[in-house]
Image 1 (cartoon, one colour):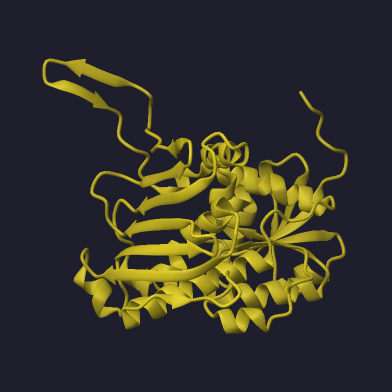
Image 2 (tube, rainbow, N blue to C red):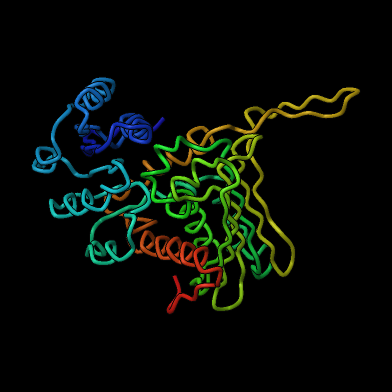
Length: 334
């Protein structure tokens, strides 16, 4: 067993909510990290989470002023991500920020964070199965990649209170799939065409959002990706990718809660799919924190600020396409 390093890098966490709790647990358990501070405007949330992992609740200003803090984990509400990243960068800290970087691509472009040591939390890139699929593509196992099919369907919609502050389906949910598509296609996307509707919950439509979408992406060489999104599957958390190449295909299927299957006179049945993103991507979140520890040691972030801006460009292009019913061209690609 590898020994724990004598000196662990101190990190501060902004945000004690659902995803903040995941990052707090992973940071506290990591042999190269020490969770020193938790910051949350709800004092009780910060105090409870800090107490669980031997950290201290404090203000962001105090945490950033501490020279012992090497990095900051930004898990605050989405509309605060950019400001918190800017504050951390100005203090000279490395940053691990949850997606998306902001809700406005124009604001993100103007943020001048290109030189910050910023790792953006697109956790799908760290999923072992998705990584293995990409390795097959890079190895040329199926020849030249031609098309992708990315399916991401939630088991059930979130509360409408969340929808109202989420930035909309394209920036909140599809943004992961935009990043995965860019990562797997491995060339700039030059055209986006989106069709979307509110088919799941009328309250989502009343909140001026959509809950179902199909998005086509095209690269300059003609490669095509289809993204399928729904806020409700009815059968679990549906996360699949299939890639088609000149010599075959490679796919990632859904993970089930166990590998047990039952065969009887009524047929065959399997265990249900994992039912929530926190379970489905638990290992990806742990590997993200491992990568952040490497960033603190000087490694280049695998997913950076520019990736966040490009994903936002695709999200906003999808929104324009849905509004106009027309494909949207991206000059220079995303």
